[in-house]
Image (cartoon, rainbow, N blue to C red; front, side, top):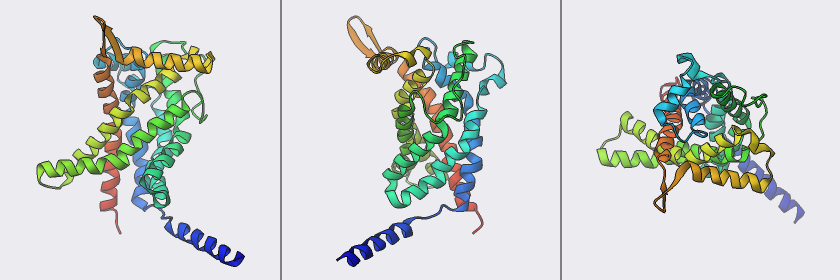
Length: 288
């Protein structure tokens, strides 16, 4: 019986080991090189979204004006940190995801990838957010969060946000592509691009309040000294203040909702669609 159990465990280990598949070279290249380029390109969109988490009065145009208040180059304030972190981040979204999905399935791959991505990028994104806050209001943070510190306020929110965004890239795009192909009656590069963008727009909209809550958490210094219950109450109040308004005794969604949906889409959907298009192109054209 003991020998039979040992043989069964060896067989199971062999089965799992054989299910591991190393990612293809173009997938690795797209993650290592394409990811940083994409994340640096969308830095102004990310900075505008960060400023919006503490400013409900400004519209999207007003926030982008604040982003570029110090000139065109000012729009990319702090953008180098997420770009550097984007190399391991998009290696996680690309090659590492395919590795995880090989033994954990698509949903398991999405969750494991998101945790890995947060471990790699939380520090850089938090540093970027606090630098953007300091650029708007100098002195908000005397000491900016280290870009190499993978934990801190809002890290759980960061992971949850990444799960939603990664699901858009890896789970929502295919159904959206099928819908578009059914409507158009054809399948080509444009319908694939439209499906990618549609899937990432869905994820961007679903993750929008989560991302804004993360931005609020890491750019509000006095939040860190509150107790757990006080912090939770302050976060809930932030979401209410951000997205609800009461007028004539009736509570409704505020005008901030479409603004943040638009800005989150401009950041996430554009970045992930650029990446997925690059990854697919490299896989198709890479020499065999």
